[in-house]
Image 1 (spheres, rainbow, N blue to C red):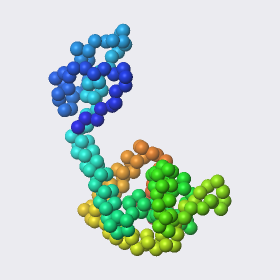
Image 2 (image 1 turned 120 degrees about the horizontal axis):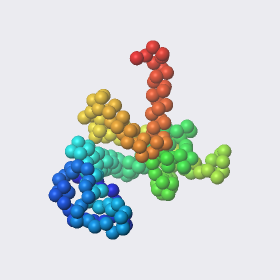
Image 3 (image 1 turned 180 degrees about the horizontal axis):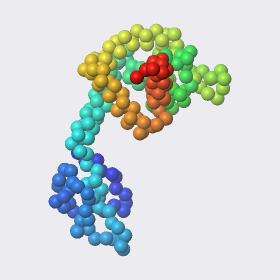
Image 4 (image 1 turned 90 degrees about the vertical axis):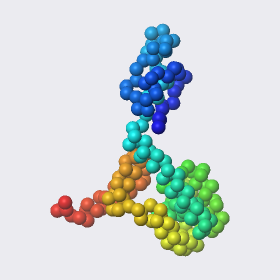
Amino acid sequence: MGVPIPGSDTVRRCAPTDADKHPHPGPATRHRSCPDPFGGREPVCQNERMAAQWLTPDERRAWLALYALTSLVPASLDAHLFREARITLFDYHVLAMLSESEDRRLPMSELAARSTASLSRLSHVVKKLEGRGWVSRLPSSSDGRVTTASLTPAGFDMLTELAVSHVAQVRATVFDALDGQDVADLERVGRKILRGMDGAHWILSDGEDAEEAAVAAAGPNAP
């Protein structure tokens, strides 16, 4: 399964060679059929760039597994939550982030970061949740320019009841098939990929705080 780098306007498409027919070609070589239109400038062929980007068999299997999971897991949890409460997984996550926060409220900008969403998307969802009486929005008491979202008592009661079946669904979908080492590996790999995409993501700092707390609780003689 090839993952080519998108070509620029100056990248030429060349006739395929025998090397291109191999699923995992070695270092790219100059195609004899490709003249140099740049007057001595080193030409770059589209096929050369594509040849350098094929996934290895192990990478391909890992990628396809990840792709399937990122499609199937959210869809399964979405369907369950819609049956239970007519909300989406994203709706649930927004409510959960508020429930875990001090006074069950967060500035909209921070809630957007914790939901990995744009402010525009979050505003649309919060408006919907407001309509169901689960969330309210008010100016911050410390800065009137900042809008905060708060989980209402009705929203907290609904979430508390729904969480029981949602967590059971998450466990059945993801964790029942894993042992302790699998869970540790899943966390490690997930955080590693996330760190490469967004090193400032709040999940990473949240994990570091937990690790530091665990080390401190273990004491200086811990292994």
